[in-house]
Image (cartoon, rainbow, N blue to C red; front, side):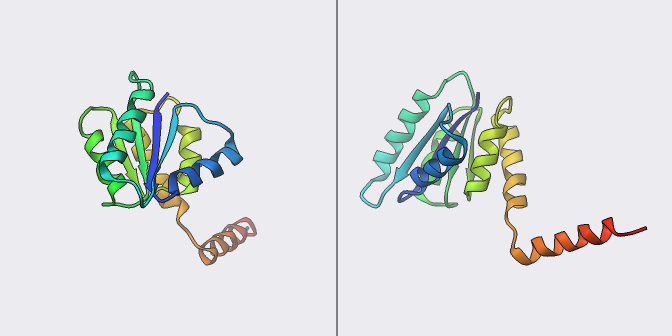
Length: 144
């Protein structure tokens, strides 16, 4: 099974992990690592390296991060380019995390990346857009 390492600023990772566990329960091959203000790049690097070693080395690993260009993204990217079968996804939110944790079985890291990007785009919407979509679907169903 594909391993997932979730990381981000402050309590981002542990907060999403807690929400995920509330909805889906405990998940295998999943590690969340926060990057609080009191931490350092060196400490985060060591934590992510430890997490990589804890996950089954025979399987691909995906790093999910919060912000493009932030320290968690940069450290994860450095580790990802060291070995094939590793990907970094940024802009992670709860919907993406939940869907991808459930869908990851049998996916390579590359397939996970492609599916996660599609999921992320699909998941970003607004009330107005969703109400409009409901009206469109209703009018199609009422047709001849």
